[in-house]
Image (tube, rainbow, N blue to C red; front, side, top):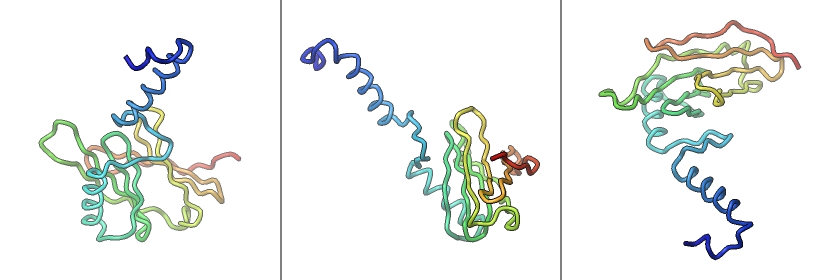
Length: 151
């Protein structure tokens, strides 16, 4: 075995390193910056382009779903890729973002990734105004009330 050639004191560290490398290779390790699988990104881009009529997009993935922000139209689109379903994807409607409350130059977008919940956050970095969205099964969105983050 490969690890037999290393001193016994280094073997636990090598096992941990091997586990991290295998987790990254298997795709189960989620880095802090969202990483897109090329097939999901391509399908999401096609769906968003059809729904919004084109534009410049920013993608946020969460498990088997993608939140798509259209920078030109200032809107959000949600696409889910159900596992084992006959449908290749489930697409939501388009959620327009209020440009007065969340101007593009002060808009920060975040995706909750630490829990099993799929929340998409809109934050105005200048005023602290924030809200979150969740996608509904009927293709709509549920949005929180607008609130202010304390600094």
